[in-house]
Image (cartoon, rainbow, N blue to C red; front, side):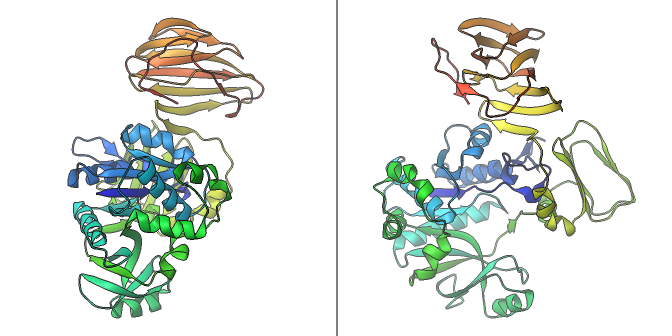
Length: 446
């Protein structure tokens, strides 16, 4: 099975855990059997591989998410990187061209396209296999998954099939309606449109060539910023007469808000938190190393991270985005392909960060023109390379790097550093990458 997972957006509706770098699908909030936590993208990827270990998975995403994907899923997963945002039709076209030209998938072999962030069980992925098999038959150019609605939702579009069978031709589509119209559609046998479909790559590329002039993946990537912003629905679905829908009646939840996310959580507290006996329907998600105490609250979500603190009625949490859009602050936490960092102190002329490098990984070789840096090794051991001079480092060592100095660090074990940046102009753009002056082995660099 070939799968394209669409992973986009900044996920501001789950602030303060999500930010411009860490979208909602990377928040580790779902408890594993061993007591650890996994994110939406980790959960979905694990479920795909449990159903089809040989599945070819490609994630269509932006540059800002690549490091987090590698950090959480490793280097084996395929990634189609969008140079900029151009909506779903260009993104799906680019990912399809990546599958054909880079991954060498047969253009006549069906591919399933779906969002990366629904909350589903394994039967959903069995349904994706059935969706792919139906597309392979060639009875229709597009095969959509139609989700059996559980209530008249105003958040989804609706698919009206021509018959009540498990597989049917599509009669029409309805845009997101009000609750009354949604109830009428459901009475007529309508299904939710969750944006999940299967087709052959040759079909997508044919449609793309009708609207865009490109020679292949490399050419499409190079001119991506010139492409028209248009959704797959507007560009393709609305004009396609041969569409089938396959019914799906299993668990499917769109975890786009704190309200829906807490419905899928198996426990009321993630992180340090205490609920009094007078609380009901309260969830705490705390990434800070301080306790959160809730007393006498009902149907409230409390979330704390270095980005901020949210205390909200669960239904009102759906309206968070306009408030968060007005916040201007530095990103305080991010996952990178080599590990992660967390900002712990911000001053006008200094920035203090806790850096965690995964064993066998290193930063790239780089320098800064406008700031000095000091690393203090908190735990672990590794090696540093400073202006071509290598040295072993371990707990308690201090490494100083003046402005203009080329430097990197490689972790032999998990390595934790306190990094202090000192200067009058500290910003993320003050970084120049350099080629290694000699061999420097590491599993991952970013």
